[in-house]
Amino acid sequence: MLTLLALLLLAAAGIAIKFMPVRHVRVEGALRQVEPPALQAVLEPLLQGSYLLVDLKAMEAAVLGLPWVGEASVKRYWPDTLVVKIQEQTPYARSGDGSFVSEKGVRFRAGITAETANLPAIIGPVDYEKPMLAMLKTMNARLGPLGRRIAVLHLSNRHAWTVKLEDGLVVVMGRQDALAAFERFLTLAGLLGAERLQAVQRVDLRYPNGFAVSMKAKAAQRTN
Image (cartoon, rainbow, N blue to C red):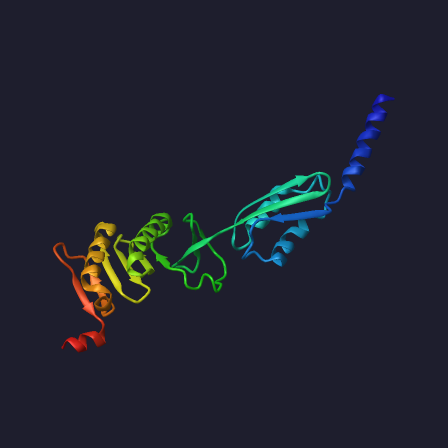
């Protein structure tokens, strides 16, 4: 009798679980790039079962597969609610292959927006995103007083550094200590002053005891 009662209770519980649908899905997070229709499209197919039987890991994986999503978690809140927490990637730079690099140095792919079109580019070997990002931040901080910023930071496969500023000026540092070489450029920039620096097209710092300066075409004509 007790066995039969236990089986009936289990059957009733199974029926109850089966007919406990997910009634609410709450999305938390400051979402600027993740589109609600895209989020709905990946979540809806996974919400067809019972509230207690929904695969939370599958939901998390589906959300993480969307562009711009950096972190995602899904939790149950009794009796019928699922809470999806999303943290978007924050792009700090563009990569040479068309992807982005986040503030944490993580490479990810997403569509270009008006906000990301003018981000600086870091171009270098695979898995060098974090050191290149640190170099970009340090150099931009040092350029701050000059009112200039880096447009492209390039590291060759032979570990030679080159910088292109937003105004087009190119600084070639080669395989030496990049920050030490960049300090030499900053010293030169201070000596030249803002007006004369505008006429400079390229500074080559690969010389052990000096540097080479190339002037823009119009500036070179005026000096001849």
